[in-house]
Length: 68
Image 1 (cartoon, rainbow, N blue to C red):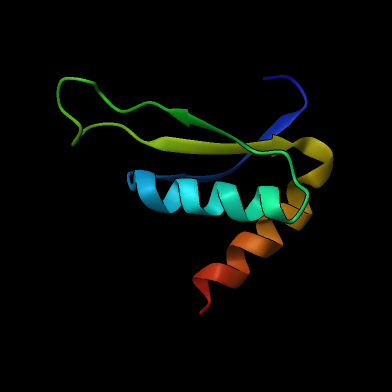
Image 2: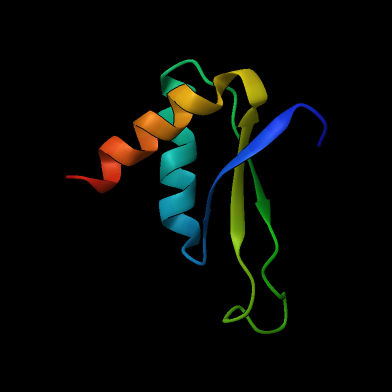
């Protein structure tokens, strides 16, 4: 994913999708990549990517959510 930056990674699909929706609502294009094992969902993570030029803004939004 050239020109994209990973801004978040978690094993929690719902929380990652919530953050993705939040970023999109703030006008930041966001894509999630699910790397969970399909046969055993305990293993793997979900990563959240944004365009590289939006990385700092996205990180600030994500950090503001974890600080609540």
